[in-house]
Amino acid sequence: MSRSLTIAAVLVTSALSYAGAALADEYKNVYIAPGLISLQGPETRETGIDGSDIGAGVALGLPFTERLNLELLIGRADQDYDLPGGRGSDEAEVLWADLMYEVGGGNGWQPFVLFGAGRTNYNFDSVRSELKDTAFNGGFGIMRQLGERFAIRGDVRAVHSRKEGGVDPFAFIGLTAFLGERTPPPPPDTDGDGVPDADDRCPNTPPGTAVGADGCELDSDGDGVVDSADACPGTPAGVAVDSRGCPLDSDGDGVPDYKDACPDTPRGVQVDERGCPPELNETVTIDLNLEFDIDSSQLRSAHYGQIRDVIDFMKQFPNTNAVIEGHTDNTGSERYNQGLSERRALSVRNYLESEGGIAGNRLSHVGYGESKPIDTNDTAEGRQHNRRVSAQVSTK
Image 1: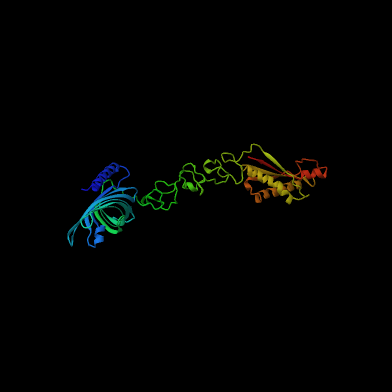
Image 2: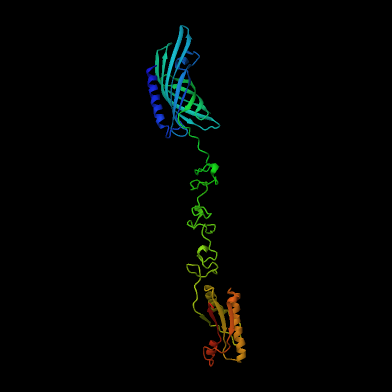
């Protein structure tokens, strides 16, 4: 064996030792591929003699990534042929390092391309004795899987000699044996969320979205609204939420239903932290300075602002009732004034119900005629004060 091949054998032995130590780690696809080589050297090209050097070689592959391998190839080929003056014999020795890139494939077929450089030694009997040269090579090939640990592969390359120039053909065919555990290709994951398509219930999740084991976007509080759309991400378990992921607030008082002790509070009523309106602990009298015309119970437009005060108060305290009281001055008979006071109270009550939205069962009315004056009936101003309506609001 020549000195070059001896060195090559040492290198291959060292690489195999390194590969064996690495098999338990990332180098799961380390392989060795013994086979046949065919190399046409420059002597054959220069003399015009047909034929190529046929010999044996072995390739060692060390993966860098899932598809990229570093491949070392050593080989030797001998060729004997007839010359006009007798028989000729050439010997070729190669020691190449190549990068091999797998370009896809399927159903057990794996195409690849490779290129690299190395040392090529020629020993000639015909024209000269020896040529040591750096050669560059590149080509393509295909590998066919044969079970889990074996494959057959072949490739063809073009070889360029730095000293001699020109391009010579090269071919290699061999049986590949994978020395470590074969790493199966990852299962398809179309949306790239880390969950294989077979287990992914949400196969079109946008890139970068955090997902659970089912491949669907996370819903940390389990309310049915994903985190990216959840305006209230800390909702307690079991609480009904709206489309924003926030607890329902059916009466719109700012207190969610699951905390609301008074879930039917009318709209616009201020509530406490329990969702309940304030309690009215005493009867409140709201005097309405409604200036009725003499002998009239017809409301004027100027009355509506004062009546609105009663409406707002009763809505603020929805658990209250109101008694609308009507009064007159002493003009006319007592019996007539009694009826007039009742009609005045009724006109206010009707307005509270029809225009103010106060439920009729919360309202009642009474007339006191001229019996409860608040001013003298001896003056026009005093009599005007006595022609009045008041609202007695209480929780009773």
